[in-house]
Length: 137
Image (cartoon, rainbow, N blue to C red; front, side, top):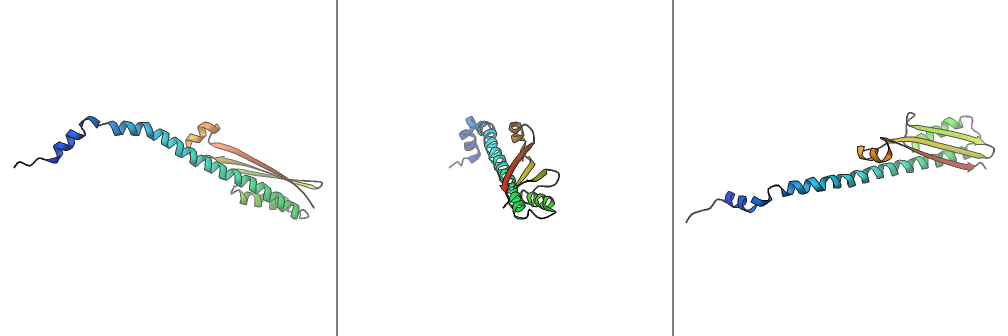
């Protein structure tokens, strides 16, 4: 009885499909990466937008509660930067108290995580702004 080697059998089975999986990968991988990077960047930008809006709202709330303080602008600026996790280089906070209203504006430049999002937002940095106006009691 003669034994056959399994190596020859494998070659016969896969002879006509030698590059099929490579072609399928080359077609599917760019689309998969596009979707994954889009999800990552959208989540990152949405997270930062919510942080900027929350910082503006909390800054205005702090301003109306503590409107009699002399160091109000510095305290609101520090609080807003803490809420949106920004630094002095990428976050600008404007505090305005006029009459019975306190207005806090937070501007933050957010860097996108993947270069793919930079194509759609017009650069690697996306500016985000939020303004909140509250009445002083």
